[in-house]
Length: 485
Image 1 (tube, rainbow, N blue to C red):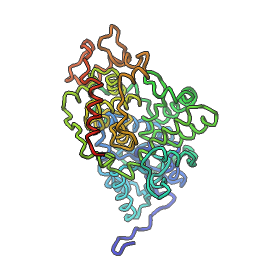
Image 2: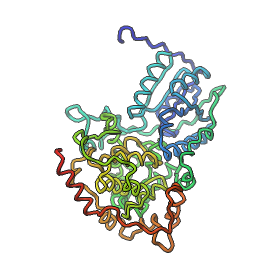
Image 3: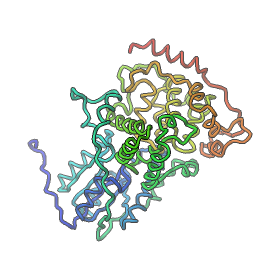
């Protein structure tokens, strides 16, 4: 201990001293190490969510989805005879207030890995320990803690393939059971009303359009995983690339808020692989991609808002968010069907097929030569499965400024990609209404979801391409050739 540093007080605990379970992106009861540790003591547990500056800063769709998830978690806790306490304000101040109100002697939480959360949580843990409170953080949002995966020379991984080879044979802890009982305090602290937070307000009229596409809560996440393993994972190698098919797990929505743990998904995938289901290893690899994104964010937090490859700092991307081409991209009016269908799917469902994400990102950053931060911020606002690490890595991977060995040569052609992955045009028919005698319900829903100020109607003519795909590709290649990488 450094000279002059205040010594932590001995935690004041007894068998009746409550433990605060501080929920964040771990909104479940199963395979929850922090909750299980609290319940194992048999002491009263006070589940708490704090709406602080970090959750307040969320975009419209992620905040809307978080609000729904909190309501669902509260219902799940009530089934156990418990409840979720809601407080708004600075996290440390709220924790101290609840500790004062309840006499709690401990606070448990699951670790997060973005730099803002690390700074906040480190400060809180140090301060609470100085206050004599037993503050403990637990793993749970990831399978592999970022500092535990190292290269042979002791550094972190910068390329996915060797990272995958390093982790694929690792043991992943067996999921812990859902607590059979959550002891409750004699007196509950006061709680805000979730409706008063109005977490759905920024969605405006899009809220009612997106809501039917949400698969909410822990039970829905478990059912989603079960259906995927039973019916889809066998053909996952091929089906995951087909946007017109139900060929993915769709679990990103639930993983983003911890309604299911990655370890639960991993063990289900391992069992499927042992049963000989050929797409199971690809599913495991996709889970490892998520881990890799967090690995990079932890070791190189600049990936969130700066070019991960520092040599790209001077690359001449357009950064004008109000440019006509950018607005056309945002509105799904580029005249390129694959791009437009994906951008409309985002407006209606709050999600986008992974193949579509790659196509729209490549088109924005390469055909339109726009900075990846423009697209990253658009997704931050509109994705119900928004995740800081995966969103940042995905955009930089597509743009070429991120962790990829061949950024120059991968310029997706949305036309040939559509021919390859949506031969029957099921995807574009589902999402594009203009020019069709009988548009689908989902294609029409786009016009109810978007802001009225856009002034769009299904009776509009479908636009001509704003950029010739061949010319856009050559322009991007010329820019790459003229840079000294």
